[in-house]
Image (tube, rainbow, N blue to C red):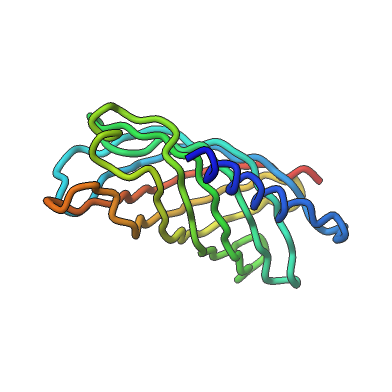
Length: 175
């Protein structure tokens, strides 16, 4: 697990260290998570939070790449799990300040209830899809995203499960 965390951090640093471009902007974001295990697990969802940083890398006027590194509380009401998430979304600006975004997400579980530790895998991957709005004059960002877990997290052949998480975010770009 330590190797995976180091790999995720190195990937984020490599993506954000492209200082040859003066256009790269860094920022922070935080917000609410509404998460739930899916498929064969019938439990109530969990409301928690996420917090972390990102880099905004413009490819052209309408297309940006945004790597993120987030701490994310997920799981269910009774089966809590916390992840370190590396997310790489492509943002396409459809109007002034309004963007559609999508891309891969990878997660390493960094803590969990004992039941989760014993019954699930510690690595997760999926797809992040969302919409964002940026107040360009202030650097303030707002986002709504759904992280669809694709990986089967179960260690057992008896059941399948994945995570689905809605995120409401507020962020700030340092200009």
